[in-house]
Length: 164
Image: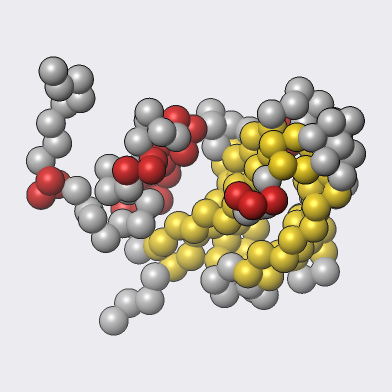
């Protein structure tokens, strides 16, 4: 029995790297939060414009479990002239973690923020996007739990596509 409505494959933009219909890993059954985020009307509208979106997860899957009270630092290289438009964050432990991101030597947040402040339904879209002139972000995550915590921050960016 088919439980999903049929979608005409001619209506799917298979070149859209963030199209949840084109990526089996992003189905609602496999990754509910990313699927909801990519189907959000604002995200859909951004994907339809002359721009490309990027998702930058921190930490990578191999380092996603941080020991109790540990700090994790990572340098993310984005595309030049990208804009940070949002965040999504998850934590297995209720204590969560804090985030500080530095771009061009300037912190994006005035102080480290708790991951719950970066959660929307399920993406937190920035009230004012942040331009990244230099495509490098220093990200620091601090596990607030006394035990190991499976956590992840995802930085959502957008940049203008080059016109031929």
